[in-house]
Image (cartoon, rainbow, N blue to C red; front, side, top):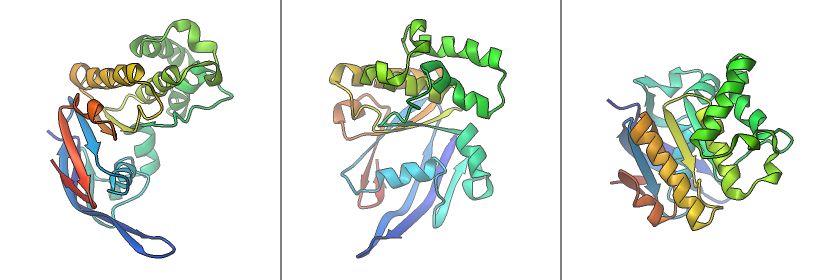
Length: 221
């Protein structure tokens, strides 16, 4: 059964000079337990589609359904906080917070107790293959690969089964890129996550269960 469904999703916006038809009648159903790769040239509509799936905006036509309910009917703040976790290419870690504080931040928003949150930090660091000793370090003290794994751990602290990743390996070397994608694939296959990754890297896409191509605002399998 699908966790996220796109039904004839259409979206356009205006620049200073023209109207851009970013998405045109995009339909697809995403299932738990799979890693999806969304590929395509710059300007093909990938980032726009990801932002709509993440609840940052609503389709102008068509619907996005999360567990059968349209995002137009959902509280989008609640949806972004508790349903759709996003991993960003630029990590977006809080530089003045420690690794542990970055990971617990989503839990604090959900009113998880401090004791439970601290325990969860250790579990998540182990899951992303980082030592517990990193908990008290600041992001600036970490390598790019380590920061990305902290970003993954923070996304997992939301405890949602929908995980969206925007070019999660764009700033990483080949070894760290493969490690991150292997981790995301394990989350799908072993823990039942629905993982959707926007990527330009076809080697990374080759590891996905399904590869979807965006071309001129349309989705192709």
